[in-house]
Amino acid sequence: NYTNLRRNINNLNERVGYKGTPKVSREELTKELFSYWSEAFQFDLEKLAKMSDAESNALQKYFYSCELMVRCKESAVRVFPEVWQVIEEQMLTIPKGDKEFR
Figure 1 (cartoon, rainbow, N blue to C red):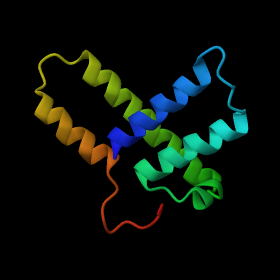
Figure 2 (spheres, rainbow, N blue to C red; figure 1 turned 135 degrees about the horizontal axis):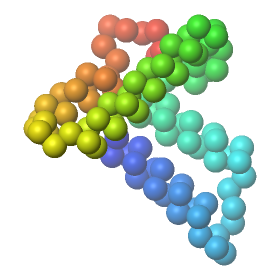
Figure 3 (cartoon, rainbow, N blue to C red; figure 1 turned 90 degrees about the horizontal axis):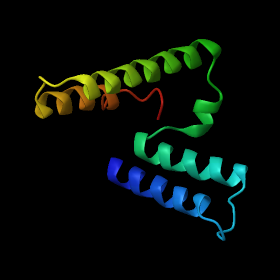
């Protein structure tokens, strides 16, 4: 649920960013942020933390390719929003039968 992820991150940002608000410890911030991402992307954080170097490199390349796609989307003016929605859904969705990261 990307709406929840966005809302949670914005709320966390507000708690961290304003003067007079108690600062959130880095450890607390990291835990909360990971829990939000874990919930949104359905990651098993313990399994994610125990990834091999090869798995970690593959995930890093995946996120980099997602970043490039976002940059392309921001630059594209001739691609319909519906087309981008399909592309994003395919990039950010784990097939239902794939239990590797769950």
